[in-house]
Length: 123
Image 1 (cartoon, rainbow, N blue to C red):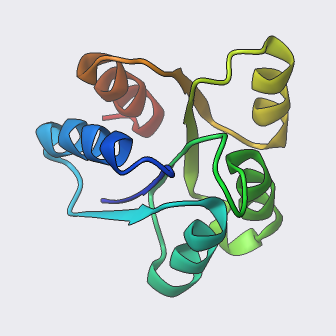
Image 2 (cartoon, one colour):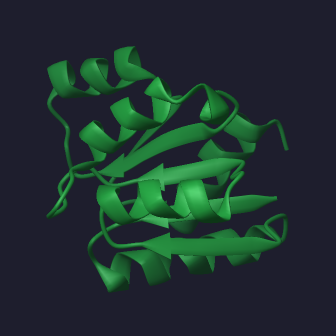
């Protein structure tokens, strides 16, 4: 399986990658520092099984990236999980309505990350 980790924080990408590696189900983990780069990687390196998407990033925020992902029929099968500090209920609902499959609040434990991904991907 192939996953795209999108977060402007290298430290957070490293934390997420460590959790993903522990799961042992991802053959490839690709990183992007914002939504704009994420869309380029989806086009150039796809298909991806899963995109883990931060909300607040420079260039293009996660919500805008999510909308663009869901506008592209080629990416209909991609599961998207928002991984963010954004905890306003209206924004969580907005993200789910825009096509997010799951939502994980920062800070989180590796176990929380793995549990959400396992549930989302049916592992």
